[in-house]
Amino acid sequence: MADILSERPAEIISAVLKVAEEQMVPLMRQSVSQGNLPFAAAILHQSDLTPFTVSVNKVKESPLLHGEMNCIREFFANPAGERPPVSSCLFFSTHEPCSLCLSGISWTGFSTVCFLFAYEDTRDLVGIEGDIDIIKEVFRVDGAKDEARPLYNKTNRFFTARSVEELWDGVADEPEKERLKGEIQKVRALFDEFRQA
Ligand SMILES: [Zn+2]
Image (cartoon, rainbow, N blue to C red):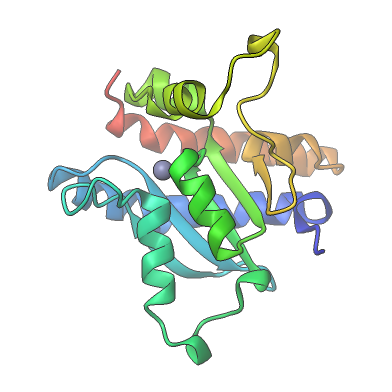
């Protein structure tokens, strides 16, 4: 299994920040003005890390059209011969995928996932608590020491998911790491205009 998340963290961070800044934020600005939520997703070629599909949340059309679900829908709207195999793609979400989207990603076979904002950011910055609440209420059966357990397996048989921050931890080149730190802060700040909380 390709492990580009641990092998090419710096390249991935630069690529997803570029997509976020140049494509997602402008698309989100437009979709949010139409009543949708400030979330987006992209499917990139693992080879050169260029985006193949970039999509935004369309909950005004259907409550299930989260950024990731809409991205999966738009990706598969391309004929089979005209889209890359899912195994050669990197799935990027602006925000950590919810339980619906993690399932969508698992069912469609995208095995490499990364995201810019964690569930706690979505709750604290956008004011949406569903990510954590649905997992806790629907999926997490009672057990001892529940709070100590992660909400889902970030490394599992279907996919490996890492936050940009976790990728950043794995960047070995110190000057590059410092530069990327500034880039991450800059792009995260672009999302301030969508803050609800
Ligand atoms: Zn979702």
